[in-house]
Length: 177
Image (cartoon, rainbow, N blue to C red):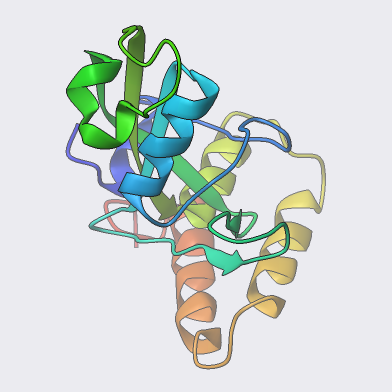
């Protein structure tokens, strides 16, 4: 998969949706995340990076204490799996070997790397083509999406919405004029 929007619209690629309560905590520092993984003997480490073609950046807030971030992504984010590796805890670095009783023990750890991207236009276009949206639902979602734009993003979102509607009507790229 090239990571482009065509993969989502065509239904190709591996994508996942992260819901509330999916993960224990998030951290901005790899070393702190690995240290916490070791202390809690967790067996999954999730690394989220912005996508190269349509990046989505999270908002970080410290609400629960030091070294733990509350990481919030906007509602239109899609996560594409870029790599999954199986490691042994000791292979993750010195942070994974705390000086506590039983520190010499090793356990398997899955490292999942994902790219966060904003794919709202492609996602609703796919839902519309599959017939999953009711009458007026597409227009309502697109209107809400445009209205939620950050200052300076309004024009770009209006342009993307217009291109999406033109494409759905067959007047967009590759369609009849």
